[in-house]
Length: 257
Image 1 (cartoon, rainbow, N blue to C red):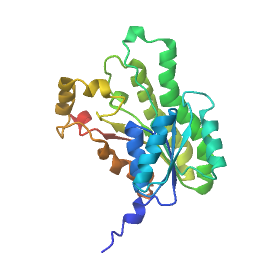
Image 2: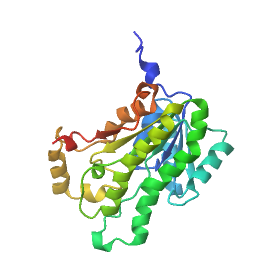
Image 3: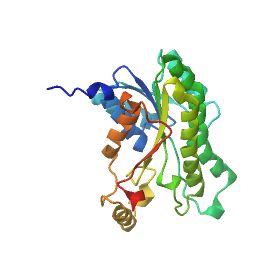
Image 4: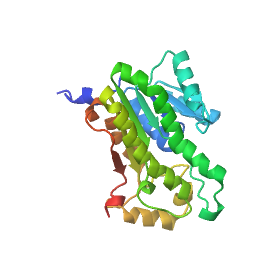
């Protein structure tokens, strides 16, 4: 018997733009969307990493290409939109996964470092939505997925700008939902727990700290990147059509304890 609900989660024919899609959580989410049938555009700054990601995804039969863009710049959305237009593509799904955490003590954070966190975590998602949502609205379908954090809700040492930006992304998610949901575009956020990525390398490089974080979860372990697959596909699909403005914690119950 065929799985009769499968059309709800089938992304065949959709194009997904994933910022920071060349590594870590962004790449894991891009892969999930590709395995569900979406065509991928990975927006990132590093040429070699992006090319490697595209090649590895292609080996799995996933259609992917990269656009090189510095998402901390004010013209990042224009660069991306021009690439899509020149490639005869329209984004149906936008995943805002690009980010940075410089992990500096509070008193050592410079204005430039603070602004970098805000540009990547807040301004880029805003500008990309501003640029791409009207076209989504014209087709009466769009899915925007932002990346929140445990630090959207609680503070961690040496991460004040990161935490402030991640608090802001929860409210930006609501603001996007309020503006665009009546036009067929939903906007939700995923708040991951501790996952092994280049961004979290300092955490996983300390076995005692990693074990402490695992013990804090209800499940009893830290995340694995495949744990993001289901939530990503769900929030990008027709199956989540009546869910918008929400933040889903994929954290093994870290915030529940």
